[in-house]
Image (cartoon, rainbow, N blue to C red; front, top):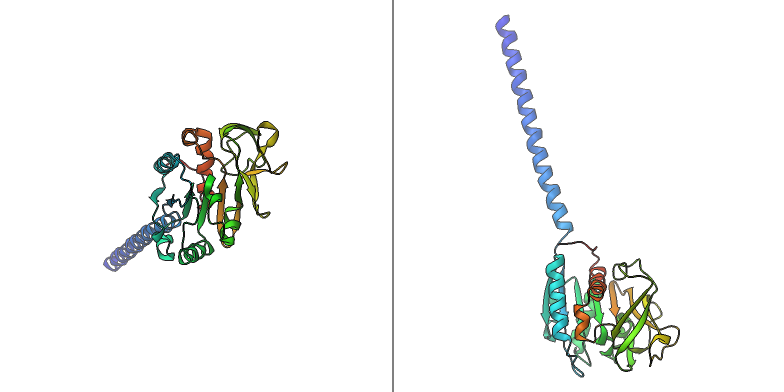
Length: 264
């Protein structure tokens, strides 16, 4: 009888040990699965900087390329730089979260490439336009609404006062109510009324403004399935060494990528 009781106790102990080991293994697998899911939810952001020009070419393009590359290194996103419009296929563009038009000018894409870019935005892609991105593709009305306006004219380069209309956005949260800086200030036509204005120019603070009391200079919006951000700054080479302008640009890139501002 004593032997039988002892055997029963041994069997119960074995069952308990086995169950404990099974639960630990299951927890381990579940933990690994959760880690993989978290990793899958935060893929590395990839940005294509496109700087093709078909008319005026800004001397600051080289500085802009380098600055965005450095932003990527500092904040953990990958940057590819190209001036090859053949890269504008839907399959190739799908590799990127954001496409940046860096001081592009003129007609830079064929109708087939335009269609591929439209599909990319419609599938949730991001767009950032810098300065002369509004001096681009005047006959492509879809693009005009995406970028938010077309270039009309500009006075001489000078200091102007920028009014911060919205400092809750990633691209403006670091700014006070006003921002003074030197650049080339565009006058616009065909402004898309659907954009959300971030920054406006105080035309009384400089000479040559022609948009009047409503003179947006940076904006963002959701458009045709994707996200778009535009800043009118970035004509001068020195722009790409200004900490506040770079922070402004970084916020626009991250907004368009549906990402939040973090350090690397």
